[in-house]
Length: 591
Image (tube, rainbow, N blue to C red; front, side, top):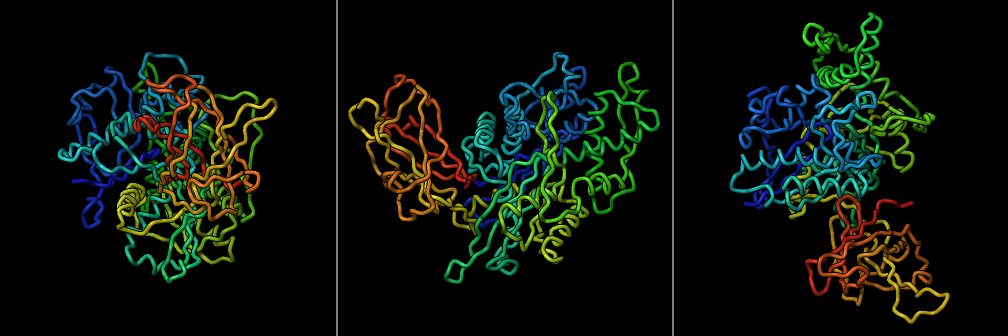
């Protein structure tokens, strides 16, 4: 049996959903076996994205045994998250955010990240952001194989989600993590699109009763580490049928539940300071992790007035020096609601603070914590007025937060509330939608269109004798016509092309919105056609075992526009189809 599988590799939680590729379209959440307490293994529908790298003296390996590993070195999931609040220096968290941060070597063993004041090496294990992400995916692979021994995960059709704003390097590193985890080939899909696909799956044919031509859906996705906005439009295809098209994607905003945990922790620290209590750096980090759990409880429907948290003492007072405090429901209203979701005008812009000359390395969190100002800027930049809102991300489970965003957006457009598209489980929507997308690819559902806004071309140097003072002319070869849909590929007609490998070379790209009739493989003069030249790609393509450095390899071309908005141009050796090289270019940048 073949399954289509959606995996949400989240900043704070992972989830998996699947469907029989040839079945009736029913989508099921995978119960993920994990340690929840010492010696206790339970199956839960989400796997917290935390890895605990404790020593044998801190946690015995037998106490974190799994059905497939009696003595694991690393604890992953619920127990890692909960016990890690007491051992913050051993806890890997927010690996996904580090995966997208260009300021560090994302393949280096830098996690758990420690501020400058805590950089002393205690001999503990460290992981790279790639390895940490691979650790969660490897756990998912084992859990899947435990439940489906006759259908190994690496033999299934897998759709792995990433933030819409991940750049090409972060996406490649995500694929690398999946490969190291033994998942085999994966297809990447944007998280906001996956969330919308989940709503389509939930609505069935009734989705047309909620949306009509001219509607614009705002996908407001605020998760543990990032905030993502997307717009999806509804239009009539001219024959009475409705089509969906993703029309705008927001920037990568490192702002989410992690920031809110920190804000709550500082609120607690402020009250403790007023009572003369002071926390050590390690205790502060433990408090931040404790506030994560308190936040989730205080944002629930029947939230208590306060949630008690405790932080272990340090040194010889480890137990006796335990500090107890409370996180208050009023903290949610003041620190979270007014701090992260303030009411603002629709022409509001994000606020930048003056940078300090020297600063510690760390995640580049957004300077402005106001999600609503980021949203106002996104909508203003794209010039579209949403008529409906689809919520996604764990943070948006909070009814108070949804109401604040809904009221703020309504104030921007005459006071009328936007329709709220509900019915999905915000914890599982992304994985559920990714699995549904796999069915859509097989013709079993509604597809969101997102064709390229321009035609794209690559420069091909013509063959001619050398002339002093003159470079050979360059023709433009069409590799992606305007409107080429994401997720589609095309083999270009045979051309006598040679690829330079083993040395640094420059690849020139061109684009235009005017030439709508150029087919893949069309060759034109870029000057006469008035193409716009884009930023070149300068790279060294590895020669491979059987190719000499600087050799010109005869190749054919295959172009693909991926689900995450990247033009992949594959150069395939004519005499050895297994030898291939990839060039990438973003087709989301319309600037």
